[in-house]
Image (cartoon, rainbow, N blue to C red; front, side, top):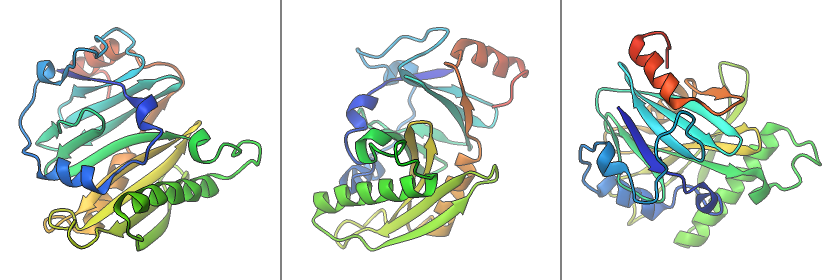
Length: 240
């Protein structure tokens, strides 16, 4: 089964990732089982052999494979779980994976570090600049200074990543107690995964969840042939 959603990347890249109120809305909203017809908006791109300028999900034996094909950035992420549901938010990419919320978004380097290539900034410096850019956006939105913790992270493939988190302000922490982020430089973008700590999931659980998810990242130099990949997964000749 393939779920399709409209690409709103150009709009989304100009704003911060997780707005505290957006996350609260997504978590508190009832999660319903959805099928492909419910997810397709009138403007959405139809599935094609090479689904460009959009994202899709493919059902797998272990859960779901997320496929991103957008203007020069092509990758997959594997979600492993028994109950995986996309959350109904037309402007953000949210999933519930066995009760743990995950959001995915990209930010173009040109939005917060336009001179990154000229200055030959290392990934660590780019990720710190991105963290500060995102944090300022959230602080301006909720009119509260964030108390952040940052963790420099080295992935299993040797790539530098950054993990950071902050406590939700009083009055906004009924459901989500902390916001958790993992970021990674991918080509001319920062890929950011976001989750949360709740009464059911500690921040340590959340950080492990993000690390386990990013460990499944597979980049492609060319657009991913969704139809071919789906058929290979069904035939058992491709591993997500």
